[in-house]
Amino acid sequence: MTLGPSRTEPRPDRAGRRQSPIDIDPAGAQYVPSLPGIAFAFGPSALTLGTVRPATHAPGCDRDDEENIAARPSHGSATAVVTDAHRNLVYELDEVHWHAPAEHTVAGHRFPLEAHLKYHRTGEPSDAMVVAVLVEPGPAHPVLDQVIAAFPEPGEAQRHVPLFDLAALLPASRGSYRYSGSLTTCEYGEGVWWVVLAEPVTAAEAQIGAFAKRIGPNARPVQPPHERAVYTDLPPKG
Figure (cartoon, rainbow, N blue to C red):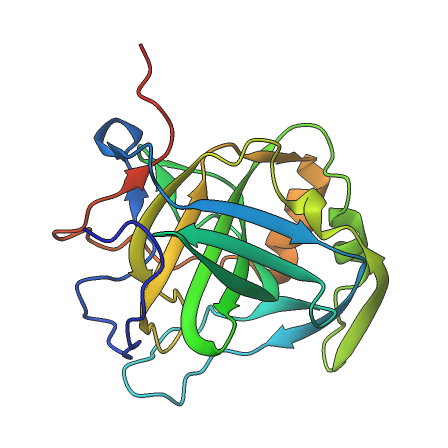
């Protein structure tokens, strides 16, 4: 039983048995109090935003809805330290991107927006961890307007945000659901450790609408769970 990050060679196989996203069933998640802890650290950072095009040239990649905005932070500005079996594994944040609507569902419910913070383990670029943050309608999000204002125009290579609070992307509670999956865009390589934060953040309808208009719909359909287990550090209710 793998409860934390492990070195698994990704493979491009959209028909694999560990594909993402999936439906998270909180009632069926296995509670493991000893799940590896994750300590997020964010320093001052700029953001570089660019448009990511679908990789339709790759074998088996026939989707045309993968265009996205990737926001890349300053090098070394954000890390996540995972305490796994008495080791401290350091992951570096490579980029943040969004999916409208959300890709993961929770008990069948689909949120209108989902942020992905994509990390790689220091010294092991193919060891990927993606932290998913679900977004629900409510009070305005404190930093999304900075991203929206910096969306590159069609044909524009990049735009920059000189100072951005990466920590504001995460909810106050860091309880999570974890499972072994894949990238959700071409080439769908497996061997990705997913951390889906249980507590959503809120964003105003106008903010969600701006993302939906610029990048949506770009969510990959939910994939079969097959034999995979979903683990959680959230104690059972009641």
